[in-house]
Length: 477
Image (cartoon, rainbow, N blue to C red; front, side, top):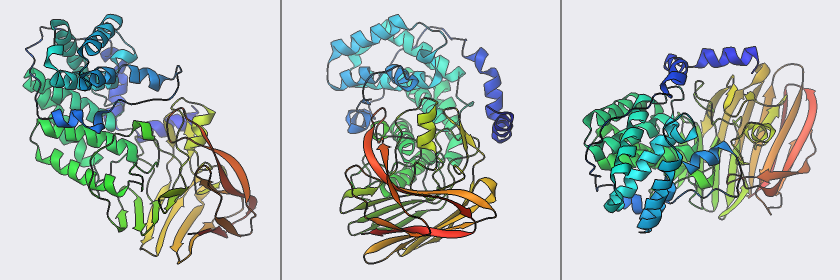
């Protein structure tokens, strides 16, 4: 990390984050103890726990990636066995985990994995109460204490909602009002900021939006809380609107199809849906589906899942994907993750390399200014001011037989300009550039699931020239 990047990260961090990061090394080495109360799991979420929303995550292949290691500690295997009625496997899996993972610093007792595991083990016990044993009860109690002492204020975002889920489910199961109160306190602090007025989650990832929504639906089945219910309902409407014709979420920013829980959502609305706070516009009309990224990448203090993809769009015609997001094959820091987070990988214009800097696995900035200019069923328009003060304005016009993408670049001096249209695998490019550039077809990788890389292609224009300038695409529809 360069000094300028460190200064930016410190300047944009919340005071709460900085305090938590300073205390983290000490707090995570402290593990609570005490006699566990009796356990009585509430029955209200049973239908949700048996639904497709709690199908275990299936990650492709094998490997040492940290996210894969995290998933190994989530307790999804225990819940899957309980859902299948395989008590012996569920019991053996819990015993094996407890034997291999005594309380100690590391991924097994990371607050996020612990929070997830607490919720999933409690769900398993709710479905199959005979899984309870003294050892399981004592382990769950100790895990719950550890979550309460290590709420992830160093991260914020969806992690704190997951912490609250563990505290409320665990507190309800153990009759521990202090844990319930702590979880409710976190939700009352976080939901007014995290769930925006238009129903979107402030991390601007439709996949993580679904993950947070599932947590709130589960919490709402356990406690009666008006703010939780209202936030969940707004999020359901947003999630329905951002769903693709195949029912999956639009893959803006981080998140892949294998991480997205399958939830029961309302029917998506026909016509134009605009979410000005989150920064998305979606048009459904006949066989056309168009989603436009026209807002900020993330909160400045939480860019972990942000991609430099402002003004990118996704297009489906007659139930088939045409222009797509590249997805994300890995959460490991390095060149591959930087490419998939970067501007050139997306269906937008990269000026002098990209809209903002990327470093590490989850760092980026300074984030650009993005403004929605117009939204109608005939035209969508927005602008982004990126590095060097160059303004990119994109207008997407819908005609009877074509989608016209018009890009205006305003600035001074010479700049490298790359415009890309990534296509779904096995799609022949139904597009032509206009302006001064000639398009070439380049091989691309599409990664809609983690660790899965599918060959695709993109039409790309590359040139260096003086600004201001205009260019764009015409796509047959």
